[in-house]
Length: 388
Image (cartoon, rainbow, N blue to C red; front, side):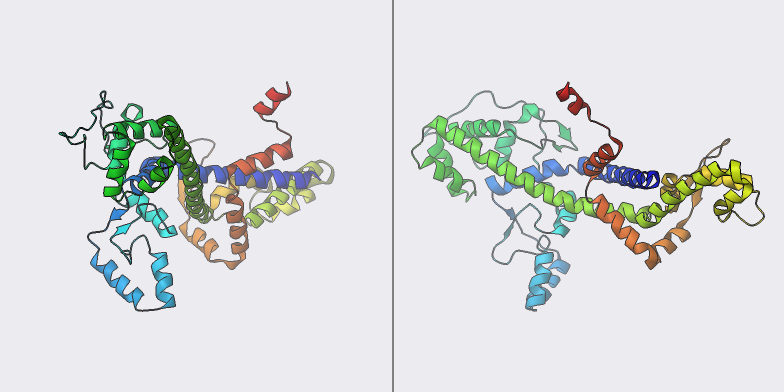
C-alpha cells in the first residue's frame, strides 16, 4: 500500500506545483496588462456611454468581412468567431467587452484601453446645480469620466490610467446622485441620459418612474449595481478559465509532462528503495533493476548513487527545452535539450499522458492543495482554530 500512497502523493504534489505555476503566470499577466480594471471600465463605458464607435476598419479586416458575408453557414460561423474584430452588421457601435475567445486574448489586453486617465486631483468639493441661465457642469463629458472624477481618492496610476478594478455599490450610487444634483435632480439626469442614448437610461428610468423617494432610489441603484457586478464577476471568471486553459496547455507542453510516465517513475522509485533495502541480504544481485539504467561499463555504485539522487519529482523538469544541472561543487550548468523535447512532443505514446496532465491542471491549485491535505492528513490553520 505504501507504493500507491507514494504514487498518489507524488502525482498530487506535481499537479499542485504546476497548477501554482499556471496561477502565477495568469496573475502576472493580469496585473501587467491591467485586465481586471480594463474589464470593469469596459463594462462601465458600455453601460453609461454606450458601445464603442467604429469609425475606421482595417482594409484586410474589411476584405475578410466581405468574404464572410458572401458565404451562408460557414460565413456566419466565421463572423461569430471574429466578432470582436469585424465591423458590426447593423450599426457602427460595438461592445468593448470581449464576446469571443479571440477577443479574450486580443481585445482587452491589446485593444483600445477603456480606462479613464489617472488624475492626481481630488474629487470635486462643491456641487454646482444646473440653473435656467447656466448649463450643467461638465455637460457633454462622458458619464464614465464623471464617475471616475468622484472616485479619484481611491485611485492610483498604472501607466497613466486608473487602476480601480472594483467599485463598492454604495459608492457608485452616491456618485450617481452627485452627478444628478449637478443636473437639477434625477429628472435632469434621466433627460440627459436619454438625449445621449445611454444604456443606463432604461434601468434608472424604470426605477424612478415607480414613484420612489430619493433615498429609495439610491438604494435601488445600489442593489442594481451590486447585481450587475455579480453578473460581471461570473463573466470574468468564464474568460479567466479560457486563459487558464491556454496557460495549462502551454505549461504541459513546455515541460512535456507525461503523467502516465511520471506515475510509472514514481512506482520505480519505490522499487529502487526496496532493492537497496534488500542489498544487505542478497548482495549486488538486488541492484539489477537499477543497473538497467546505467551506461555499459559504468561503475555500479556510482550509477546507483546518481539514479537515487534524482527522484521522480525532479525528473519532471528535466524534459524542458532548457534545463540546469547543479553539481556538488562549481557553478550550475545550463543544458539545451530542444531536440529531445521536440521528439517527446511528436511521439504519440506521450499524448495520453499530456492530455491527462492538461485535464488535471484545469482543476486548479486549490483543488490539488485540498487533495494533498486529505491524503497526508494535514489540517488548515482555520480548521484547527475553529475546533479549538
